[in-house]
Image (cartoon, rainbow, N blue to C red):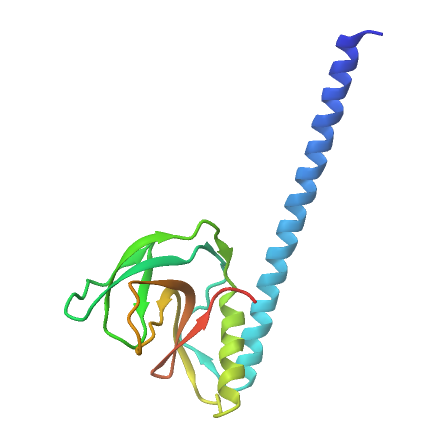
Length: 177
């Protein structure tokens, strides 16, 4: 048997298999992006049917973001507002300072903004009407919600969608459940 010829045939078969798997992966990825875009458009159309209006474009892109570990500082040691990779860090409630201690090892995919809007709609529709409300802004932030009753030296900030709806700000956890 000619091993040189056999080796070349095996390499050609492996290259062809890799090409087919790559094409399959790309087509699946494109299909998933198309499904997300279509679902986003349908979600926005539904919300508009329910009486919501939009002053801003709804982001279509999802991100892979890790959680942040923050070292907290006592009152009087307030730090300047910070960002992590272009995303603002928002402290909800307490006025405490912090510094970034590190980030999680694994980054998780965030949900699409349209899905966060649907979650907000579900929360609000139980207590009030959304008819006539306007989505003024929607952006991705890191949210820290410290416990006011105790002091921890360190806490975790997670990605969240910050939605400004008719003058009120709401936060929706951006990690898909």
